[in-house]
Length: 350
Image (cartoon, rainbow, N blue to C red; front, side, top):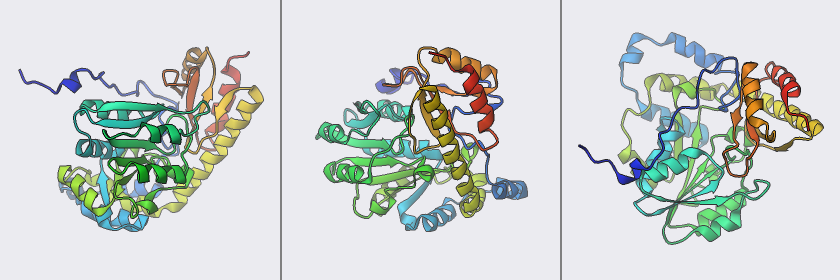
């Protein structure tokens, strides 16, 4: 029998959270408006040879680098942010070295770290999910090889300041510091411009959220040319599918579509804030396309009743500090009235 790494045996089997989704899906932070019509038109124009040919990732990297005002040598396109994280973890995390993350945050950080035999040190967020910069810096030690920070954070929607992120990159010079900017478009502040200052700094982005391309699995990692060169050595030359690459230029150029969706999200967030405030429900102002709301002890029943109405939400009760909470992906202008009406009718009283 083949022998797997010992760290793999202790991992829970990860199962997709997608189970029988129909109706209005406000549970996975997808773009509920879909993708750009220009992307859809490009998809419909693809030929048999477009699909039969291997993808040319470098062409896409040149487009993205120009869009981000970086050099092509500073950008690596990946199969979603997930592959970017796997490459970063495999490159910098060693057996018994330490991965420093926040808690709560994106679950895959811990899973990828454990799979590679790393030791996970999770620094809890403050009571109001404020970024614990001091505590995180105090947790850095000689064994810390990787620090991953989602900014904005998932599932809280809260953010770290640019000054705090710079302090961490400055202090943790022996660690790769990864800023996961999956929800950048809704926040508007990025660490990309700091890449020239910190050779240990990386920024990841995705086209799954604001661009509505979750089904095409397209992401990127940006960093110094030397470090990105190391990541390329681990990367398959054909890791990005050709369909995603053919659609990339249209996605990048349709700024109007992205801006419109982001504006709808901001409007929808405010509507949900107002409803929570009027109903006396605790919530956390978000810089992402979702809002964390505390429903209370009846959260399980609430989520089930919303699903029966055809509205899927994410029950986050199992996350640290999130007892009784749901994460609500913000819908479009047409979708939010349907959600808000059901929310008013079904939320627990008292």
